[in-house]
Image (cartoon, rainbow, N blue to C red; front, side, top):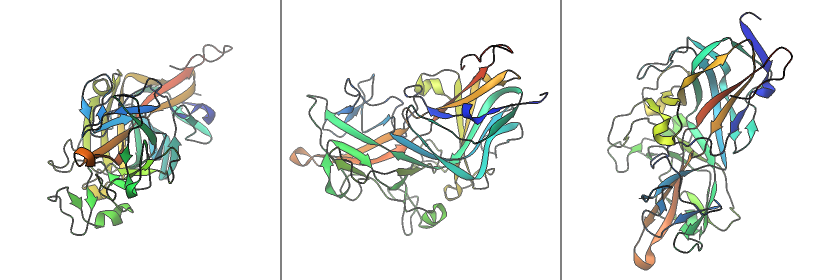
Amino acid sequence: MKNKISFFITVITLSVIFNLLTQSSSEAAATGCVKTDDGTAIKVTAQANMFVLAGTSTAVNQCSQEPDEYKVKFYKVALCTADPYKGAADPDFSSCSDIFNNTDGVDKIIKPNTETNLLEGDLVLPRGTYPYLVVMVNNQLHVKHKQKYVLASNGNDATFYGNSSGSGTYCWTIPVVTTYTTFSATNGGQMTDSPPAYGLDYNTAQGVTLVESGPGTTDARLKCGDVNAAGMDFATEIIDDLADDPENEVYRAHFDYKDAEADTGVTGIEMAQNLIEDDDVTLAATAIKAKRLLSHFKYTSPVVISENTVGFKMRFSTFSSVSLDFDSDGAGGSFKMWGAKVGADPFMIQVQTKEKRSRRARAGDWR
């Protein structure tokens, strides 16, 4: 084979490696919440900022965790020899070799410590050195998660309130749709509203019904109660804007490369992002046109495909890809902590290949 290599899809997997990487939460710092020693419950204090970020003394009302399940619709995965990210211009895929390309998209559920096939059949890639990987998914990300909470002071069960007046030490996701910006969609919605709102045409374009989130039995978008988690299902968050401060900045469809080490402690990976229209190539001019989330990964150590490559694996990490967004209201005896919503944060990806050691030897280790 002079130009290409081929190997069975059984060695191409999408796998979540628990604790492999961390990822910044939608509004909190990159670290997760302080948990009990056995890791089964998050410690809280009955106050407005109920969580503490691990390794700090910082009290916040949002922090990130590993979701139980993370559902994503994939459209494109490709290795590239030149950088396809062009900032505020359309991405350039001319140097990219597809690993996966499906204009209809394919839904996949990613779970901790579980490998999931993305493809069927053989994978054929040109030999070469690839410093870049692109992954295009639907910008509607789905998270299913249940979490227990205990009081930091004594380890007793904490009480959180959720949708429809339920309360208990557990909170879990239900099928509602929110946005990364927290913007809802209302009749005559205006970006000058507080909180800002899209018009109802946003719901029509996205095929959803956006809801607000916050304290109260109507606006709390999690269920809370006992361990049974009745009605637990995927919650959806739409990545609708890539501006740093959407409430005070104009809409932006690009997020420039950022070193993952600053947020995650992982070296050798930078990530940039675009919001793309449903033609899979055009930068979305407005939030209502944004239908795809395109993540660009730049590797300090490029992916090398040679005549000796016999395996290829993408390791997806969702270590902190659910943002637990909570709220509170009242005072004194009427003070309550509410399960406002969850946010779905992007995943990080490491690529591994396996090389055969010699013509007669077995394949080497993943690297």
